[in-house]
View: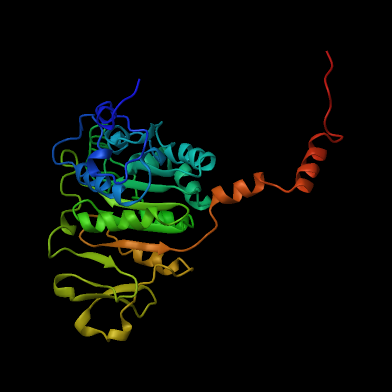
Length: 349
């Protein structure tokens, strides 16, 4: 049976990529079921608008998610996707990326999914530099299971699972990624559409593993977790390559190297311009990027850097493994000799 393009669109199936995608081409027919006011809506809208700009065929996009509110993402996009199990999305995405180098592979995960049960998979995907882009939604709470504290909840947080306050020290996702030797690490926030889109674009166009932490508001169970980072007077520390790091009302604050050797916040008027740290995400040594990540408040967040912390070139895992599989004849002969050598035997019936 032959269908017109309009009929195929009505069937939600377009086997031939159009010359130009619109945002509507990536919106699925599924009802979006997040709570009213959830920051996930803003991220989904930005992502749907981003995909048509990437010049990637829709059938070459694969989105892998774990478990949590954020992991419903796969249902809300008209592209290929896998809704996997708790914490294992990076492992599944590694397999997809290895076997299908023609795909743009995204991982959508949350602070509970990625940093608790999935922590091991996350750090090794970053360490190996698998060719995937990880969006880590951080609302500092378990939202899907109705409000327990998560690995990023601040110390002393009162929740259903910590009625007198959690005693745990929270993870700093950016610090963790940098410690895992991730080649691309960034942070953005759901309320800044332009910054969110720019950061995700830079992440997906960088070969290897990219991690983007997205501060995301949970209207129901953790409202106001990032309130200090919203509005024109916020203390978001925006990191821009080649520019001095200044922030605050009228850029009145600056990041400098303190007398003790660590990075500190100082009044811009009190320091020389030459003493203000100039951001460089391409620095091979991740130590300065790590120091910048530690400027994030661990308690009630009223100060945090956003932007690209690190963006360096490293061989990516997928290409290296495929190079091993595509071996010269002499290496294949050596491998065959090893397999059928003296340490093997044949069982006869």
